[in-house]
Length: 373
Image 1 (cartoon, rainbow, N blue to C red):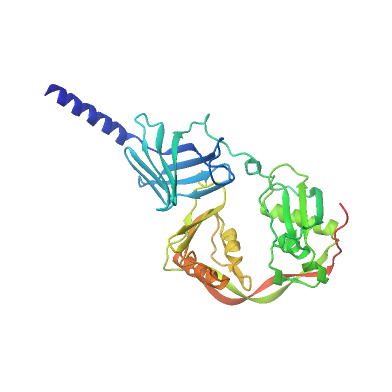
Image 2 (image 1 turned 90 degrees about the horizontal axis):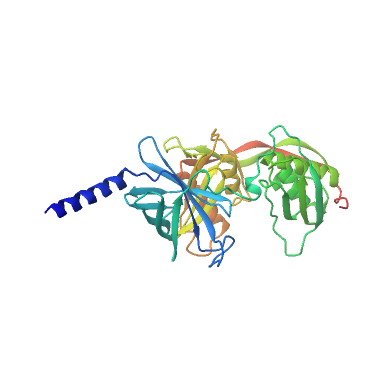
């Protein structure tokens, strides 16, 4: 009897200790898949980091970052019932594990669709916490800087580069398949319909551009646009002026009857990111740490014949989830995706209003092919 009582006391003490533990903190581990693709690495693998915090009401919320790929996203579910832990993006993408008795590790399984991988997470300390590397880890350029491109190479694009690709959030401006019109759109932050005049080659000849700033740090989007504008002036001899013209638009507004978008916790989601995943016949888009401007710019890429404007009045960064019904079940048209996005935005607390508004137009007075490198 005495032995039974002692065992019961020991079990009670262990259970009490586990329930007293918390999983708030930063947990990190390495998935046995390639950092740049699928499959086994045979090397260091893909580093994954979960950041967990406790809300004032005592509930948990968190975010996941694939530190080698530079993207992060909020968790849709963060649960802890000692010793069981679940970090979930969806039913199909999640981590389930058990907290160790000392509260320093969680051993479990990472599941992504039909694939699953063993994963052990360790509680990070200031000394062991992984740091982001590469361009995303650079400190931002000074806010009052007036940068230019110190070195810029402009070459004819390859024949297979028919889609313009660029990144305004990296230090180096690296763009492929760019027409002069595309560069003007970047510099002025306008759509193609807002660029008027100019010779025919403006929309026909494509270039690859690699340019390095003359100022330390990672430029903001506005600073990158400024440098592209200077590049057009110096290398293409662009002369232009702006005016106003009425356009039919779809204004993004807030549905007064719906909840407001969820403000993003900058400590959990330090970098703007978008994650797309399939959920049955639906496609789910998760925006993390995004501004309404960036969110709307993504949505507008599916509405090539429409202009979208922001009239929400929202500032700051938000976590936004859009469910696109039926678009994952087979081939769909851009109109179907556009319709699904509108419905998804409505379910997320937004609505679109059709109207006419004056928008800036860029009128080309003079432009030349780029000067030699």
